[in-house]
Length: 253
Image (tube, rainbow, N blue to C red; front, side, top):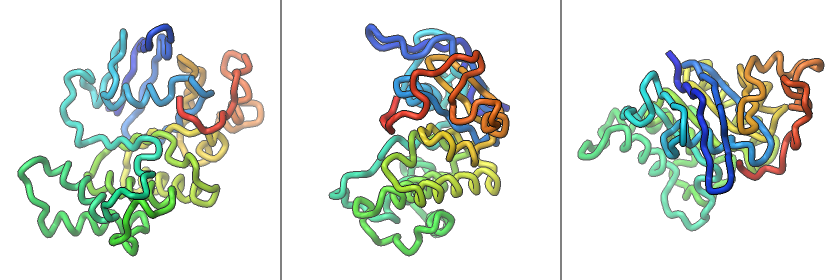
């Protein structure tokens, strides 16, 4: 089964076509890195995949169902760019992760002992249990991203979609996040779709790379992408054309 299927998808804002004739599929269990120049539509693609946006034409399927009809949203966790950078946000790390568990349980269902154990295990899994009483707004960017991943773990989502999870954090924290995502993918078989401008870095962890520039310019194995005569660092496309921007400055599409 496919986690996501996009067929002839078009999306536009007034006077700005963002995506056209977009076609690709993400298999369950894949770790897919989505790259491309600024303004290529990467963040828009993620929002289409998780139902935040609707295409003008074409269709989006989630786990085999049309996005408009899909209801099992507990299976998907979406982490946007810089989700918690407000230092005054009062919740503790444990409380934020508990929100993920509560959302999975649904309204009217209290968190029980076994749920608290899942919350603890999720924090331990990402190496943040010792920070459980810390205010999340006071943590570093890398630590906050770990907490948000723990929140997704506590919700027991099968699919994790992340938009620039390493934006604004240093290289050591970036590699730690990528390593954690790889561990999630291999150990728990979580499907990972992640947008990144760190082309060389993410391609070393992902199984597949998809290069977006309004449409799909490349979709294949990361191994092929990294070969010197292939598409290393996005310096060339499958059509042989040079993209206008290979890596970008860290702003989102």
